[in-house]
Length: 67
Image (cartoon, rainbow, N blue to C red; front, side, top):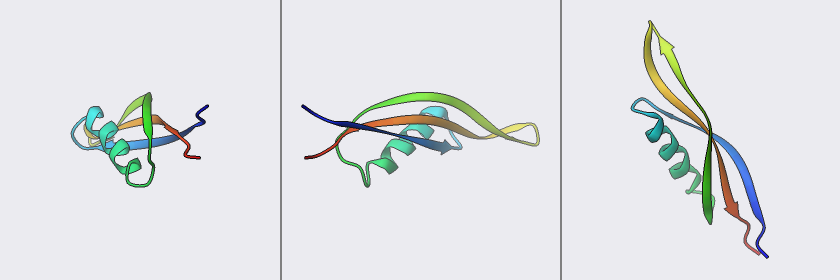
């Protein structure tokens, strides 16, 4: 029976929320194997001088623990 682990990450992008999510998953994939699922928990933006300068997504990354 597999064992799963979940971690929470924040992705940031100047382009979009989708790019912020992809960035977080790509970075996690550098050190974590067997990523199976991502749950997007929250979207927000950083604002400077009344303009959006960064998109952020808070995600949960779920991966299978190797035995």
